[in-house]
Length: 298
Image (tube, rainbow, N blue to C red; front, side, top):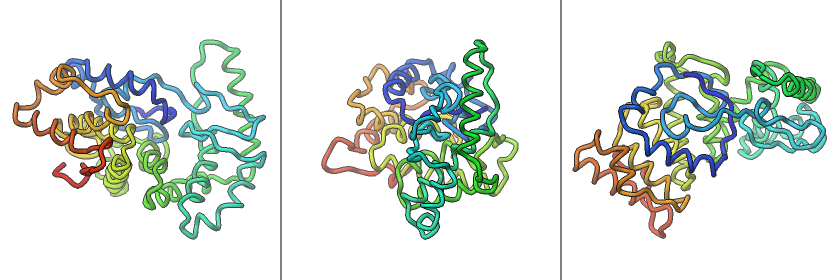
């Protein structure tokens, strides 16, 4: 399955998509589960559920970059304020601190270099020739911004991303998952035995759980999906349900009994269902006393 580029923070759409996911009958969702995991450069499409219901939208394809301004979209869809500088100049100001272990600088270097990674992506199939022409002109602007950035620097962004995620940078922890193990199209089904892929899966799951500990609803919903699809670890419907419940709390749109039973009731026993509901409720993003689900038996 191909991961397609998208902005990580479409919160309103995500909430609507979560409701759609919970409304799907279980057999339909399972039939939609992918057999191929790929395209690590953006929001994963290797999941079933509400993330798969979101429209494909990339930082340069569906959300054009305005290179005349100082704010340019990185590959993850977040804006990078280059301050009128080229990517090379922006990176040069931060590279020393990034290499010394400063998480903020490491993430900023990753973000800037990810602009140049987007240049390598294929051109979308635009139905409107005028839109395609606009995209091509904007890509020309990106090429100019990336003058002096080598392919090695584009690839090294993943190391800086990992360093920032390891240091607890929330956005980096989310982006680590969406970039995937190599930062480009990669079939993780045929490459399942690849040591780099195996290590990436372990780290991605750890970082998502750490982000979930901060009650980030996107991380929690992503965890629900990866446990449902079995993409990072073995499929676990009980954990998927618990994380879905936890993800609803920061959005202040709690899931109803009917939604939960429609989504998970056919795959869980009564005891498992009650256990998942308890775990999800105990995560406690809205309470003073919080129980971290990453430290429970998942």
